[in-house]
Length: 383
Image 1: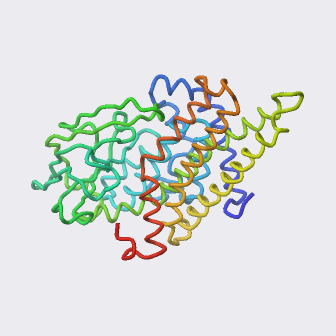
Image 2: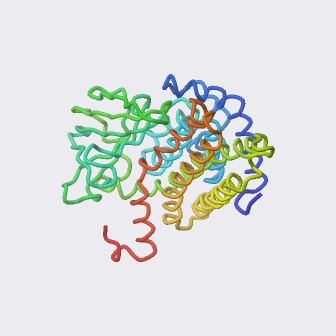
């Protein structure tokens, strides 16, 4: 127990862990090899109420709050980080759709999203760079009752598997920066859309790739938020996803630690278990402490969100610290398993999977800038 999780949330996490252990964990390595996300598992997750449970009941959700989404998210990630992307993308996109979309347009999509029948991508990054997210070049131009979309998005999670995407593009001038950006809900089967897939180091079941738009006609009713204000309105949702990412990678680190503690307690060297040597047990104890602390920070960020309190700085802390820590933890655990850890298997796959979060969804440098602006003021940290 901890101060953020009541008995109901603990029971929900236990239910999610049983499901993940029985249904998701057995196919972890196979999905990495085939690079195919299991749609049957995704639908089963939806039937269990494990996808975006925080969304309001009016939108088809369970209205359970951000912490509920968090505890489910980490249990799915324990079993397979790529499958937990289903939860991450649904929570981020579901929040955007429910808060900024026209009900008659987004409601059918929300039902599919929550039910595990649709996978969404969020398309923000472009070839010119990811960190300067407001400096977008993809063009969105009004043509009567439609928008015409031209340009490219890159390094998009689930690019070649998504059924729809929330796409950010420029409707205003380049000089307008973030204030000239509009967001659209775009089904991925519209004419003029092509996509590819990268051969990524990790997270291979969900994958990453590029989206190409050539004179794609999107109904104006699919706009999310106000024209030229999509970036400012929608970016608020990233505080939520950053805390979820923290829990996601820390769950992978936690299961690696559990396996490694068991390994060093059993494995013998010089007539003693490996854990008897401080050079083995102390580094694990150090990392175990940090994982526990980082998880509490992530839960605190979600608790603040559930209580309507500011949490941007805390979410940024989660996003830069947790992925780095998770990688360091799994790296150490792999070494303590010797060559058995280095061979193709769960430990090396975990290392590959968590590494990507030090790159995507906001680098450590950007997260630290966000923290600095909240502490010192934006005028004191202009860039």
